[in-house]
Length: 117
Image (cartoon, rainbow, N blue to C red; front, side, top):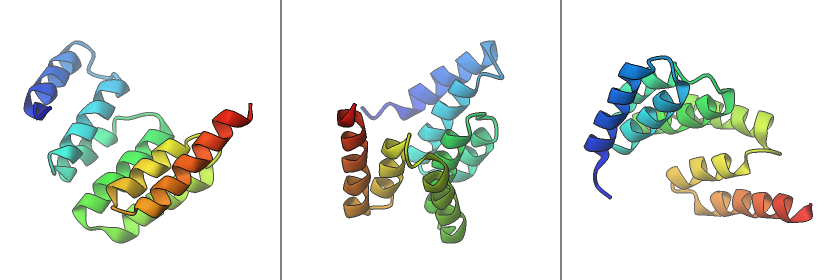
């Protein structure tokens, strides 16, 4: 809703109360990516302790920086390690990279997995 600056400020206040909470670092890194501040995002990503989220965020931040090799490596590792559990994160990376065919392919995989049970 166009209130990224306010959201970042609120998350920073939360980090004052819980400085090591990886959830807040995750959110702040996503905001920085949306604000086209990938260097700042990378600093926050270092404090995210969930490997799948780190790969996802690294893929976005490196893509935003124009570092194709690093972005592709993060996406490849995300796919290799989490292709059967986090198809939605993979789809989001492809959508961010403006690759809609690949994004929808991964969304279809997620849909199929959730409807097979």
